[in-house]
Length: 68
Image 1 (cartoon, rainbow, N blue to C red):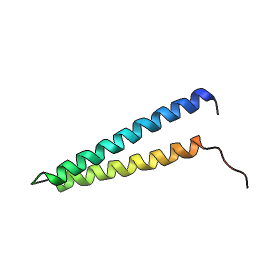
Image 2 (image 1 turned 90 degrees about the vertical axis):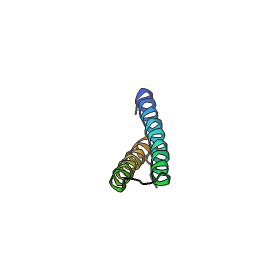
Image 3 (image 1 turned 45 degrees about the vertical axis):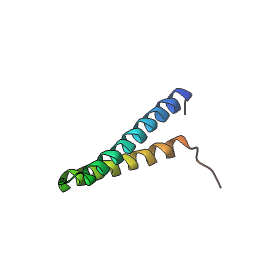
């Protein structure tokens, strides 16, 4: 993998981590504020899971395969 590609993947991974943390904050605020919209919270949690899957995929691309 080229260094430029690794840098791009690292940058994208960092963006996803920030968005994931931001969603944590939004979900917590919505849950604390009453009354809250359960459907909106479910959608945000689903988005958060999708981000987590993308982060895991990027992390696996960044880590070299170890041949045992």
